[in-house]
Length: 422
Image (cartoon, rainbow, N blue to C red; front, side, top):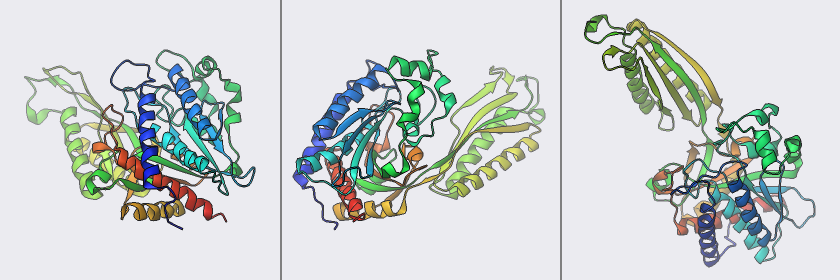
């Protein structure tokens, strides 16, 4: 059952084709710079859809662009009208991005169908490939618009969100030849799809550190984000004695160090980041009277995240009390952990162990379309080694040999999953 059905030569040829196509899509960018900028509903995204749609057609798929701008292809099964196994990732980017985040997953999925088509093989499920139009949320500040369209969880108010040019989602859809009144038509019935499998670059260094090309995602980390504030008292930098100061910046600094030390000791899979600090009044000769800072906590277990958060907030209150300041916080973002489907993890682990001799389980610290898809269907994810774990940057880099192994494992996983339906 676990014998790979794609030869090493075929897998390498497919990987070479994927790498070349990544280079082609990298030329479709709104910015003339080293990196790629391809935003949702932009002319560049529509051009990428056309290009990817042609590759889907060449692989024997029926192709359409749905009503929220996803490019979709379907390869039929042995049984007409059978439900589909959904494969893919996203084609949009952040600003000044690399060429593999998301894109590699879409093009690798096409290669799965290409191999089946070339060998005239049909499975007991259809295979559908999707290039989601918006995962990053870069243009309108809303993530997973493409996958929310497919799951039918698109919120009505989203069409009124605006980009930096004050263009609404509704207007952008109209400019792209889409109709906001037809958004609901992108929704798929629960019975249409049996599961979702996504191949993605690892946006971290674990695989590289382990010397492995492939790994299996266990969960997509949950996240909590907070705006935090220390309020003290501003004063003259030369006249207020040290023992009488209510310095908000010193309080914040003490807390930041505590966050780092505490998180490091608790759990290697938990991370906490203070990514932004604003100090007021911000003058060289004035004691800081107010500091605003952000806190971002992520991890693969919700209870562990919340436990860490409670400890950190209690410490902030303690620091404020000791220094005669006030502390307040507002949680403005909460994303629960998305667990990958256990049977799909098992299939991927067995396939990868067979192909590379061992496997590794990794939580994903970054978000993926699988978060939205998991609201309706089982999801599984396969990671490919990425140079130093760098992503959202032009220096993203993967090796053709690793992509070859990834495509081989991807196809075998698809085949093994289909046989479980016999």
